[in-house]
Image 1 (cartoon, rainbow, N blue to C red):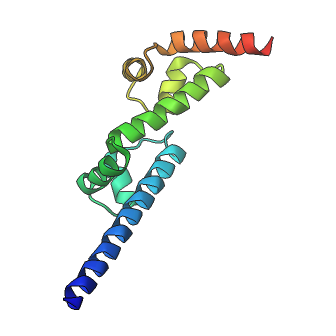
Image 2: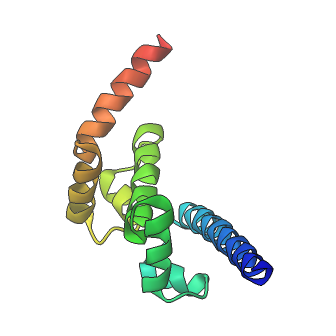
Image 3: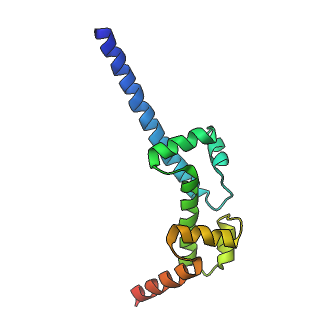
Length: 135
């Protein structure tokens, strides 16, 4: 009986270690994506960086974060675009290029889906709020 309890204890520790490992991996992937989001990123490229197959890494990310690796990449790119839209005078086409979207139209479509605004409307709306706060 004691042998079964020892096995169960070891399996429990292994499971806890795997969960901690998966959480740490997910955090590392998010940090990597955020720091490289102005580069051309793909799920396969990120997975290779962490020595995983893209399906395996995507499954881990899905379990840990509740979203796909593709969504993590897109979210990082959109957050960078938001910062560039509100803090710089870069053209929208340049922002699309800098955040590695295929083209301006694709950027605008993805941005609208994520924020509910076109990039130009977002810039105009959020700049006017920022200007009002500084007055």
